[in-house]
Amino acid sequence: MANETRIGRRRFIRNVGVSAGAALVPSATDAQTAPTWGGAALQSADGLRIPASTDGRTITIKVDSQATPSVHMSMLVEDLPANTEIRVHLHEREDEIIFIRMGNGIATLGDREIPVGPGATVYVPHGVWHGLRNKGPDVLGMNATFSPPGFEQSAKERMLRPNRTTAEIEADRKRFGIVFRTP
Image (cartoon, rainbow, N blue to C red):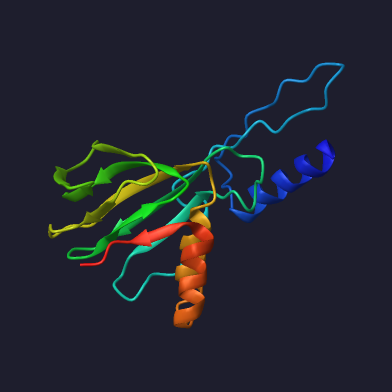
């Protein structure tokens, strides 16, 4: 079983397109345990790129729990063009850490609206309303890390299957534990 996991993780590294400059961390071994996966260093171009949405938002899944099942978190990067937003929502199961890489915007956290810019970090416990709006003229780039992992799969469903029926959308929301706040 450990061997199957290790092989699956190697496939993950190939699937995300780790560049020649990416560093794989060697794992420690001892005589009584099987080798474990040592992780990966992904460069900016590495990961599963999701085609741009109709409003121009782009997502790259960097750490994918489906491709690497034993991870305890997942991560994606998203770029929001000017005047786009991540609608206010909550996660029923996952905590989220949002890190702003570039640009400026307004983060919604509970009932607060907080200006954010490069270097800002927003911690969102599961069950808390949150969203992000880019009101500036430049792209707002953010990283989102989820624990436990799995929420990144909703981004795949939403972006790779844009023509889902209303019933499919509702089924996905329930499956991924996402609730959108009504205006």
